Length: 262
Image 1 (spheres, rainbow, N blue to C red):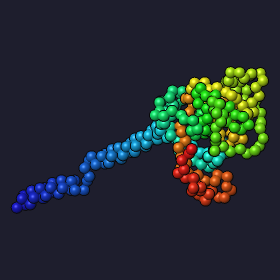
Image 2: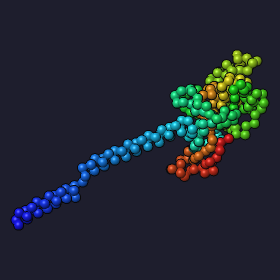
Image 3: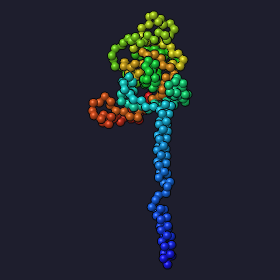
Image 4: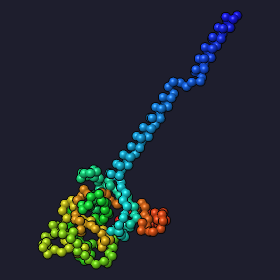
């Protein structure tokens, strides 16, 4: 009987011991599996972030772009504090850091409001109205614009009445004068200049606020590859000149939000 008792104890102890191991200890692979799962989730998150960033850069470089108005050179059309959405697909997008243009579905149109890289300063973007097309003859006589000999009505133009001025930058115009104009006698001013003949693939840009705009009259003609995109609409606007605290909230121009740009 004692022998059978010891045998039962050995059997019970073995069973209990084995059961104890199974019940009280986690499977050997559980901890490492959790670590692998956490690492996988981390890298999946990184991949998603990288993909989102890449998509953002592609959209910004080739599809759409925002632009903030910081000067009054396009008043009344655009005001300081206007935030613009720019369509980069329409005119074609330039491959970053190159002059290579990916063709768009539209060519620039006369009187488009366009964002571009000016030739006189690097890392600067401007927005102006396209006035002169390739092969056009453009001229201004006492603030009145003429294109190919015809007077142009410009309802968007503003004049501040500051008086005419002469600027040394305008000397470049002598290289593009129409036949019959004597370069030696040519004296361009802000309000009277030309006639100038546009070369192929070059454009003439003017600000709507004619008395307060640094534009093609001064820094010259614009090559086609410098055009960034067509300004489409105003997605936000506030009175940036306001001295009230939190003016971007308290001075919102609700009537301008969503306005198309013409």
